[in-house]
Length: 344
Image (cartoon, rainbow, N blue to C red; front, side):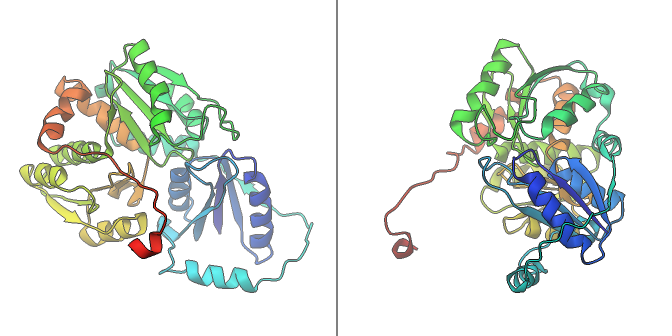
């Protein structure tokens, strides 16, 4: 049994049809959850207890890109070390057969169950009242926000909310400087408390404070570690090796154990399982949660930060100001060179 979903790109349906046909030819039972975010596949793989899950997406890339994110039972990642190399080998040997036979699919609507799960991470009444700007980037987050809005006691300002695989307002990658301004401007114009922007498959979320200032993912990792350790001290928090001091200081001060892991979702998830870590964070805006099958989510983080803002009675800028002063970062610096092989 395999659950499949897809993002909003023009090629996603064609890939879905081909993938379903191939899997059905090997006697797989297919559950179709249709347009969704990557984390909904993670959730559905567990919720429906399937053998695997496949998300058709290219995340934050331009509209003409696409691909597959594949997980096994319990949403465990499949990497080149755990089966992806075998899949590649089988694919390279495969002979294409034009098969127009009808493929039986079982449609499943798991959206409300998924939303109930992510909302279980917070006390909904403790994020009232807030005004929040949501920028879905014309990706897959819009429909989820529409459904969540009915359950949340907050004032929602939605921009670029309609899914559109041509990405008319720019590719859905809030890390790009040119893509941040629209969210920042909306926060300022609406006098909002927070701004949230997502990539195409919304497995990453990006934060703007009440002044419209973009907050580096490094500091969000620290805040999320604090959110969990304030509720229950003594737990492990896994972090990546790129930026560490702020996370280590917060976790240690709150009686937790900071555990460094190699970068990458397969490594982070594996280490979290090993340590039974309550939370794992990467500065790239991937955030992982033990109670979400050790998977990453782009919805749970903003709920936790919103709860923290209300609980502390301080704006987001105040919550991160001391971190920024103690541990400033440059942001990611990239350079183009003429002879990369020689330099490496």
